[in-house]
Image (cartoon, rainbow, N blue to C red):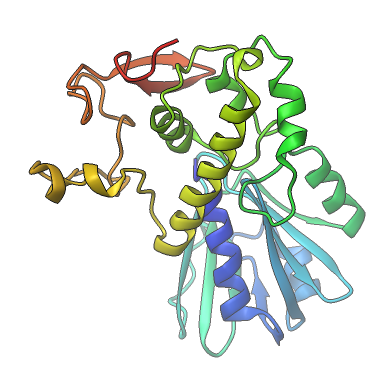
Length: 269
């Protein structure tokens, strides 16, 4: 499932390519055809992201709410758009660009009130200006649930996925199995600030990199990472490999229905 930086990058791309101009809206697959017909030729006013949710706003009309889920894919490119296949749920197009959405968990037409309600169900997002980390801390500081599970709970913190969860805990030497209530406020503030910095970098580069300069392949004389997920990481999908810092073996285990990765030598209780 895409992490929050990907959705914020999609919102940014939609604003740059489509906002402020009429767009052709269609649903080659047919499952969104009725709403697409109502929006076709309308002005796309803005695009917004909250956690893993994308909202496309049409002037005086409402919002298309998109959640990619596990199987959703986006393709954006320059005009002219290629012939649409019957897997395209939603296509936006103008004279310069097109965007194709396939296989989302959610693609629904919602009102302003429904958008506010959807956001109210989510925790603060490290990438949203003004989102208050105190809201997340209020839940974390009294929870017996592990911090690794809390970071993946979108009602606690919005936008953090498996990669950022594993990497930020490693960067701060925090055992993923520590209960949330055992964290100090200073530790939480450091995690929140680091998540914001890492995820903003992810938006800029459209990939996840979490390794500090002194631990990059060139600085350490090690080969670069080769993985479909892209950038340099400390522990994610590195099970049974040596830790870049202590040399110990990276471990993995299932937690909250996802694979957790951590270094027992660097992340001690």
